[in-house]
Image (cartoon, rainbow, N blue to C red; front, side):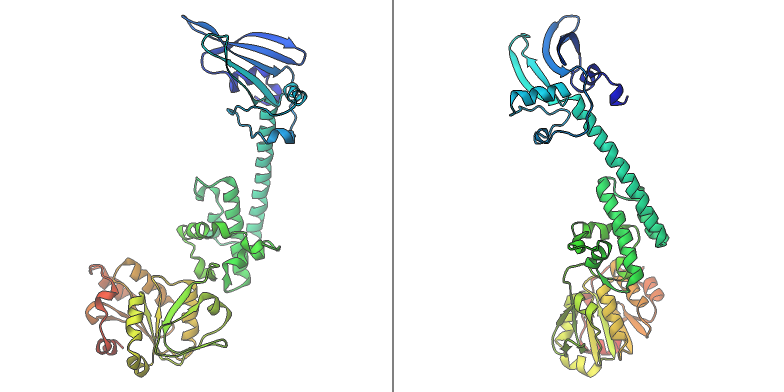
Length: 401
């Protein structure tokens, strides 16, 4: 029933009275009435409370500023630190009601406090309805935006409210939709981009780059759950400085690295410049232990003209870009060396997709595979092992090459 059609008595029954209670008597005092509430059963009949409430609320929408500081909710009780005239005006307008609760004797006062009145409840309901209408209009606007940039099916599915976590608030779901649209708009404009560019491009204002910072990890993780690999769309950096570890010769306009030590560049550097190498063999290893072990064999690295890149457990977009840059130089062959498990297989598959040149995948006991299909078939019959269990040495590495 709309609030305009409810009586004040309806409101009291729904919002104030407890089980077994009923209004026994109504007394008028101008525009304020006093309701006597009793509890009655086959064995008892006692007065439990008195309620002072307006007779005819105007059902206004704008809640008085002074009243908002008390943060009323439907069940909250408050003591009002206001002049008598102010409280009386709020009672008359239906913003508050006064509830006096009695002890079991029905005479001595147990509690005397103010609660949300019918006008206050109406204003909150109208506010929610207005917010809902605005939310629906915003959803329509976002839908038009998505259609205008012709988002692929995966992204269209991501925009579905049903596909989002149920514990997300409406505001968070709306923001995720904005994120998807902003993300794909940037994909259409640039091949590579930083996370900060997503918000900065969508909100052309000071601070716009921070628009999605708070939800960064959660939003990217949800995209991944939906099968959308942000890195494959060009996300090189997530706004954090992430190191890329390697040993070998690498050169760019900004810096030059030589054989003989473990080096680190960052995804920001890979985004801003292009690296080249004079090395001819590229080793893609999953774990740092392999990198550090091989880096100690500087003579082997120099003689074999090898570059060793550590993937640190996954191929990020920065790794992909760095690999592509190196492959554009003098690399003639690639050796892929990962853990012998499902995660390692996933890394190997992603690595193979990047390679235009011959490659080998290193199995256990110096078994070598020239294609990913035969490697996957072999791995299905292997127990899971980490690559550190087969570090090998210079002689084995030479054989593998």
